[in-house]
Image (cartoon, rainbow, N blue to C red; front, side, top):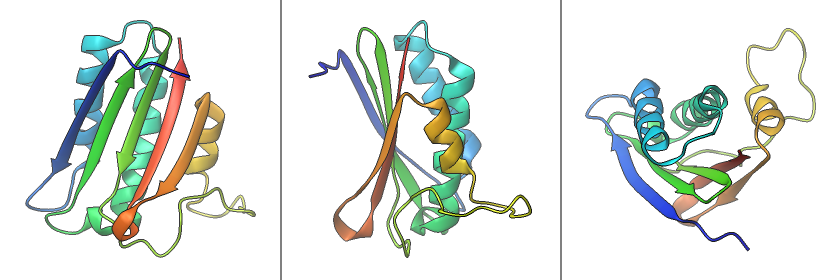
Length: 136
């Protein structure tokens, strides 16, 4: 069992369409303050991919939409959870087939390669939470 030493959760939203750069900046500020020793480049890339998917595929990308972002820190592990506003048709998953010519579909594959653990949970009202963990 993992005992999380710190937990930071906040809603990131906008009057217009949510800017993923704001999500990335807030997560990096939080991680920099409370979690030394993690690869911030990987964390930033993982947050960018998951937040972009939420904005692109759910109500989070509509005017006034947003995301819930939770950062959990333990002695040797960092977990980031991003929950969308719902409305997506399917569950976030790695596509079975991706062509080299496809414009999308590789993001969660990248998440699975960079993160030590990751997953997607379906919540109430059709909301999805995609999370990842990295170790020091």
